[in-house]
Amino acid sequence: PAGTSLGVGNSVYIKVSRGSADDTLSNLSLEGQSVELARSRLTDLGLRVEQRDQGSRTVPTGAVIGVESTASASVGDKVTLIVSIGDKVQVPTDAFSASVDAASAKLDSTGLTVTDQIPVSRSTIERQIDLEQMDITPGDVVGVQNADGSANFGAWLERGDLVTLVYYDPSLD
Image 1 (cartoon, rainbow, N blue to C red):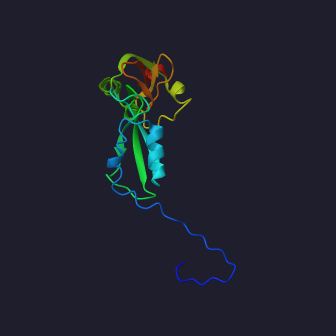
Image 2: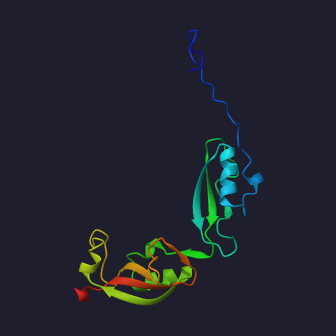
Image 3: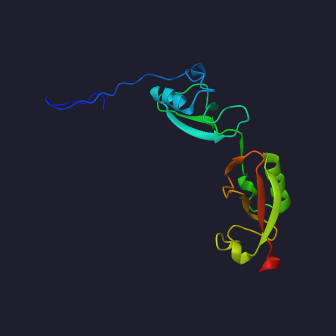
């Protein structure tokens, strides 16, 4: 600490600041750059970098769409890069436990196409989740499927992908 006296032979560690990164974010023109280059430029300024993926019809995969933060940042601040994953859409997590109609509307509005609905029994569902704990009632959606098996709530899929909703049907119990 400042004002502390040290004896002869004691070591002193000095940390030299890189200075403030204030007012530099807007000047970096990160939009359109590769995420690797943008990350490097920000970490060189002493900033902590996080990444949030987002689908984009216009920005190529792996390029920066924008920066999620204020216009300026100081050394040690967190800056979030919004990075394109291409023309993909995210399966809405709030479609889980929604009615089939509501879930269909949510998926359709994101750019996915619901082509089928599969009813499943309580025992089938409870192999993976607890109906009561998750507050699942008859007719609620408990899963989403696509041809390659990559669909699940929160997953990124190609715009226009065909998906099937899986819902709880107590008549199958």
